[in-house]
Length: 191
Image (cartoon, rainbow, N blue to C red; front, side, top):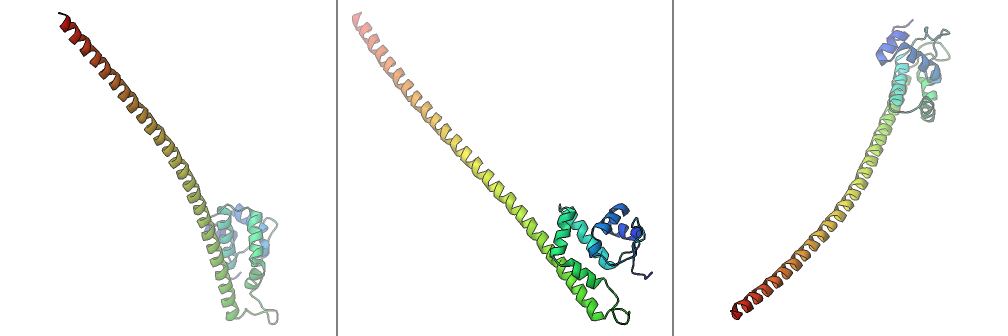
């Protein structure tokens, strides 16, 4: 076994998931992983660095809320199956030797591009989510502003009504006082 292959325990530890989760992912995403001898329960599977990179992407997508089917569809739409098959096949057909260093650079570049595209897509999704929150907050603020304006208009109307009643009451009191004064003057004149 080459040194760069990791056992299921090592790979699970590196990815921060349980071995049972890693076994399930290895079955569900087998088309994107390197060919490896697999025992019936998946315990004999060995994982390359490329496998771990793909499984990190699976973990991130699932943690982001996507279902397994959605992650599979996304990987297929991104052409990951073809990239994985090329990148994870270390032998060439003719001599059985290792692939050329140029081929490794190409596969690393393709993998980096895919990871960058995923990061951009994640960033766009976060931006869309934030924009949705901002739009909802804007609607909420507009509604609250409208409610405050209506309340302020009601209060201004109530204040206007109170001032009118106060002015009417004052006028009535002044008229009574004037009548009382007239009656008192008439009463003093009689004596």
